[in-house]
Image 1 (cartoon, protein in one colour):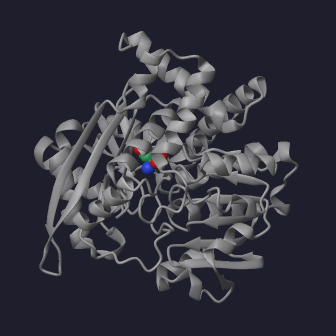
Image 2: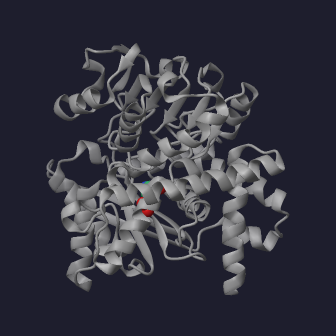
Length: 454
Ligand code: GLU
């Protein structure tokens, strides 16, 4: 995730989503020529720069040779496709689709598909490499990939989203397959989108449920998959809490991005006895120090749509969300939301990164000086892909586990990842993020070497 967020926060308030993709690309090129940030990029660094920064830091510590570094610096394969779709406005819109396979040393490429206007090739490159490290840290037998289409899916009707999904699948199916590359949901894509993907793939290859994960239960999806990324974040909190002197009954938390990941994390935190005091989504943010019922809020959003109109909490400026005093802050929106410009205002003790790449290195530094304990994306939000692995295993056998079995197995894998990474962090006196990268990169390099790839 994150990771899958139905309604991610975007820094683009009041954004004109009807701008042509051509104009968007031109804007980006113009900014790059002037050495400026990408339009609507709130953080001082792009997601690709963030991921490469942490990768390079680990490479240095591991003393990896330059030729090995070069192999993982860029992806193994990148496919860009054109997706022309006639939308309900009667105009043919040309979207760009990407599928990027970063590394497959440890198994088939694996990673979500994101539908969002800010998707571009660098963003997908960043997310694909995060998947390589994430699957290795969780120790599931997959490589890393990511896909995306730069369409404003949350502004489109379902027929339009279906058209885009099928067209995208038609164009990338040649590099996919249950033993090659297996997509899953991500921002603005869900079980229904996966159902269309599987159906489209099936027209060419016959019924192939293992072609993607995160499918509906009716189509060989796995119990527990929808909640898995959020649940995985909660497993991380549970592992960390005793060492930080936190008990659920005294834990308050804030969720930035009340989509799939954020809302499930909130609901499961609440089941443990923790109290949510703030939340946000693409429409704004709310706060109530006496507590916000995570289930009631989710129901309200499903019915009425607008979080800020929820009358059991006060609407606040989304930037104020970071300043709410809490024990745990869960960023579950888009990348780069916690940056040099706002990190010092954060008032939490722990950050559990449900989103991918939410924190810039500059923010990391500020937060570590403040003593904030960060459980990084590459392990914190791995619950989604771990459960995707379970779905894939079930699909290959056309077999189904019950939800309890899935959740228990998820807990086992998440706890193992936390313990392995935190042991490494202790051993080398490092923050969890740096330790996680060391563990992940070592495993991938070992697999690549053993294969004879490097
Ligand atoms: N999109 C999710 C992530 O970023 C899940 C990927 C998957 O299940 O393959 O981890």
